[in-house]
Each structure stands twice: as structure tokens, then as C-alpha cells.
Image (cartoon, rainbow, N blue to C red; front, top):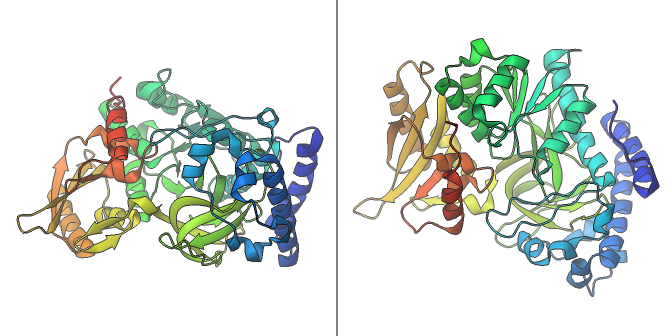
Length: 475
């Protein structure tokens, strides 16, 4: 399928080589030895480049014989952390900034915004996997029809609009960039365009999808009668199967947790038609490490995802700890997407202790939303009773006319959550949640969803609280 390609210079030469490998990878004609050879060569290229071109890595990797490092011995190198990126800023780059074709930054909500430029190599390699994902899902749902797409994400020094706009173009689909939090668009205009353009695919965060449903109810729309949405492509936040099921009940559309990645590391995994995530294994060496000790479990297992980028662009990262808790397994999927499968279970920092037990963000969300339909969102309040024991209050917002008996649903949620989490649970049915729940993609799931009264608000919660003041849909 047609894709944007650099037209001259080393980036164009790389794109030619890369796409030949990529096509063989997806055609299942690339042998394991050929893939291993590619990884070894690209690792050597990246290590030589960061040693010679990056002031940070010249110091960080000094004293290491990088010419002797192989994928099998990669665990002997030090990690790159988010703290490194924040302190070193442009010194992490290993090519001149002028060679980039895009300049992006992280959101900067919890620390200094770090620069994330991309050159033609990185754009081609990252977008190729997303294009295959979307094309496969579109064939599965629409056949030869090219669906109309609404892209609802930030565009200012953020990759969302550029990247997904390019993917829509690669698949031959019209796209409309209608970020509802933009002062130019807003929720009323976004909803009007969704209706008038009869958009069939909407790509946004899970939080935006829920707020959009509340806004539609507020402005008098019927989600099924007035809109043509068949697929929700969600990204940017954790979306457990329980939350995806709830979104499907709200929108009457299939929900795909469509891609996983970051501004710093690009698109690491993409969804298949079976709603599983597959790693982009021509672009990364994957390690799963123990979040406490840093010990590497190799390419499979449960722990913190660590990536080494194999594309020698402007800012390749070596042993970058993403801060995300994952489970990585060899693929047993019958879809068109190659690559190991990965399940994202939340940030390592979002783990919670309840009743003396540790829970991931994914476990908490699943406990709260398992079996829930018709909900516009949730928030969890953690307190201690007079005996010092943990207890939860789950605030649950329900959309009108989508739940037959809210009281019965509340009783079911209370019982299931109490059993799963091992602490007493109370349910409050709310007419409107705190606006902080909409900040998840910009700060963290924990800051957006958890009110922990056992401790003072941390920095992330304070940032989310300030951001929430300007995130209403009634404008």
C-alpha cells in the first residue's frame, strides 16, 4: 500500500531496505535467522551512532566495548530512564536536530517536557506496523470499503495527529482531526462533525470516548441513531477488557486497544483483528525486567517493559525502561500480524496496596468494571476505617437509559469488587464525576482514578487537579 517515504539521502536508502524486510516479515517469508541478522546489524549501527553522536550516551556507555555487544549480551549495558531523558534533554540526540522531519515533546505534566524529534527512518519504520494493523482490521470489518475516520487527539508538538493522519492516508481513508479539547473545535463541534460526516471510526483515549458519550447525552444526541460509529480505536491510556466491554455497551461499536507506545519510543505494539497487541519486533529488542531489581527475564515474561530501538534515527534509546508493567508471550494468534503478543497491565508506579496485598492498575480497574455496562466512568476512593483497615468507595456514573436497574448493578459491582480486592466496598452512583477522571492520558491512571485518603496528594495528583479545572465539555 502507498506510504510516505523520504525521497533522498541515507533515510531514503534505509526506507528501501527496511520496507523489503518489513514486507517479508508480514508475508511470513522472513526466516528467524534473517530477522536475527537484521537485529544484530541494527544494534551495532545504533550503538556506534549513540557512542559517537550523543553526548549523553558517550558518558553513559563509556568504558563499555560496544563493538562486542550483541542482542544476547545487551543486559550488560546500563538502563536509560525517564529521569535521564529529563536531565539530559537534547544531549540524548545522536543526530543533528536539523535532520528531523518532526519535532514533538512529552506532555511535561509531571516534569520537564523532553524533546522527541523524529527523522524519516523513524517515521517509516514506526508507521509501517500501524498501517498493517489498521488495514487488517478494516478488511475484517469493512471489506473493500474505506471507512471515514475521526482523529481525536492533541496536535501541538504531539505525534497523535501526524502519525494517525498518515496511517489513515496509507489505508486510503478520509480523516478529520477533531480534538474536542481544542479551543477551535470543542465538544459541540466535534459531535456535529461526527454526525454530519458520518464518521465510522473514532480514534481517541478511553477517557475521551466516555466524555464524548456524556457530551452527546448533554447535547441531545442519540449515540446509535445520530452517529455511524462502527469502531472505537482507543489508545493513550490503559484499557482493560472490562473497560473495553463497557465502551462497547455505551457506543454500540467494536472497541480496539489499537496501539501501544510513547512519544519517546514511538509505536511499540499494534492491535490485530483478534484485539490482541503484537510487538513491532523489527524495530526493537525487547526485555522484560523485574521492576524492583532490574534483573532481565529476556524477551518474555511478566515485569517492566524495556526496549532498545533498532532504527538509527535522531534519538534511538538503549535499554529504555518504559515504566509500564506488561506480560509478553510468544504469539499463538491466528491473525495476520506477526510478532510476540503483549498485554499492558498499567504503569509500575500505579501499583496499589490494599488490605496488605499489591494490585496492578489493571487488576483494580477489572475488579471495579467487570460486568459493568452503560457507565460513563468511575473513580475509586481509598480510606481506612476506625480499626485502620482499608476500605473502598467506588463512584460510578451511569448514562441514562442504558442500565435497566442501577441498584442491582451497584450491588453486583460491590460484591465482585470486594471479592477480587479483599476489602470492604461501597458503591456510590453519581450524576457526574470529578473532572480529574478525564486527565488520565496526560498525567496518570492513578491520579485520574484514585483518591487515596491514606496519604497526602502526590505531585501527579496535584498536577491532574490543576488540569481538570479546564476540562469540561459544556462549552
